[in-house]
Length: 358
Image (cartoon, rainbow, N blue to C red; front, side, top):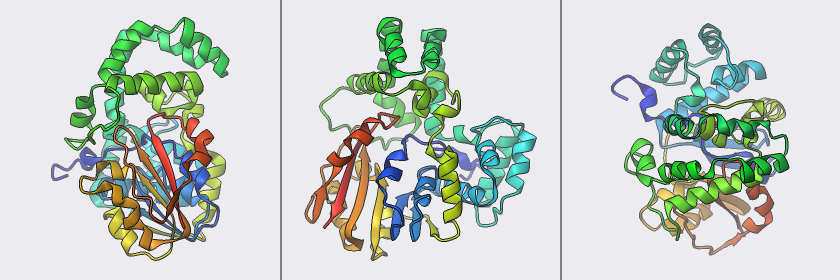
């Protein structure tokens, strides 16, 4: 960040998780909720469930500052302006800067705001600032070169039967295999996004097979127009309201806005386990894929969280190419209760586990 571009170290601005999963699992009016902040879009839906306290934590300062911005925007803006500010809905740079000026940004890092103003002034949309999003937009140039406009027929499907007809009989499968070979290259993720920290694969599949299976599942079970992830892959942008993630849902937005008046919210630039250790009544922990990146005894992550959890407290964790089987002492694996929910997760990237303390 010394070069003045705060967003050089931003991994996600939109994200790679369908947070409807965590929203659906979290009980309403829980006590203390601890969540990895990410881009902030994964925390807004949790606030909509009106917990007593919501702690948003991230070891990355840019990610945490982006989360703060989302919450401050939620407090001040109506739903339409929120979507414009983040870039979900098109507007002029001038209008977007005017919307930003309405928000109290006094407790957000000045470098963040200066970089944000500069890039908005250049006509960029905030949801496409992150390394993950930029990587998919770059990949999309390859996809468009190889597939042309043939993928546009996905947008014509109003239901899964129409989409399956196109996917089975008209989709250019041989050319798609070339794309899977590129997407299945771990070096792409490692170099462009994770800067050498891409978690080592421990599942018995090639990267090619992993991504081939992911997209086969998505094209066969999820309306493409409803997946922000597939939209980014196939078109390099979100193509319509149907693709917007859960933070854009007007009902969720209204519930989250209302909860601002009753929920205590903290933003902490720290390690999630250190923050957990400072708490005594965590009822829900949204870990994202943090355990996948741990090197030393990752299987102990539940045991490190347990002393801070309430009886019946829930941990939701995700894994992509590296899956961690935790020590379940004192916990029940209740993932099977949510299998239908997981099957409808619109990115298809994740193995999701849910554990309950007892």
